[in-house]
Image 1 (cartoon, rainbow, N blue to C red):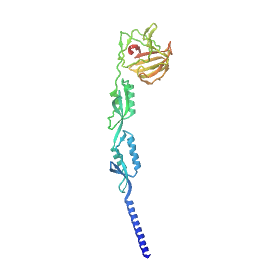
Image 2: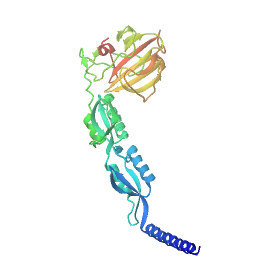
Image 3: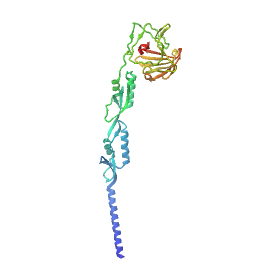
Image 4: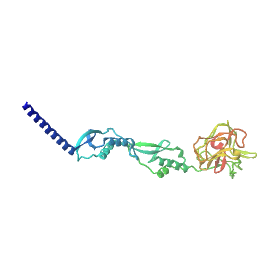
Length: 335
């Protein structure tokens, strides 16, 4: 029995010695090493991080949203892997280097805005605001192709050469053709310049559709009940097209509304300025569906047929004025 206790005491002593030694080893390891995450890309360690979650979130955000400036997003084939390891305390985490290495392994896509003319890419600018400015400038300069210009966001893996707005406007601008009247006889035409519908004239001045530099279309379908020309009490300054009350009236061409409302014998009147000295008048309307200053496209509904003002029945009185002169719509619209 005595021998048993002797061996038991020796065993306890040995266990205590081993435990103490283990604690010393753990203490040494604690002071020399620390737990970290080794970051691997394609099987190779590219760095270390103490904050795996934050690094993953940072990489994911950049992949989806880019840098918030030129890079829109990044395509990465292989995402990094993370392994817990114990490194010497002098080994520092290098999240920024890891982040840069991961992003550099992918393909960045850059965002630009392509200026389109009839569906063809003509130039590139950095922002949508610049693209809007180009279109508005071309419209204000009455470029004949302004209504054919648009823009789309474009994503490319290669940086595109961007142009300034002034350069793009200069390259796309097409000046309107000069208005050249075709005079059937040497004469002087005087316009009343008023909204009375009367024009004093001794000869007829006609314009070809090509000469005015603008393509005009018929604003409404119906029966022509009165054409342009002299009458016993003056000159009928436009074209009367009879149709049902409430029939939509479309703009003969794109332009800016300069008048919209009641006007004497015209009744409810809409006037559109198409640039290049060309205006169109839409009279006796039942309703007016546009406002002054509004830019309308060709065919856009601007009013409905009515019988307001000096009118005997529902019809549209349609005038074309060039440099304040009323001209025969029939010769231009080829009705």
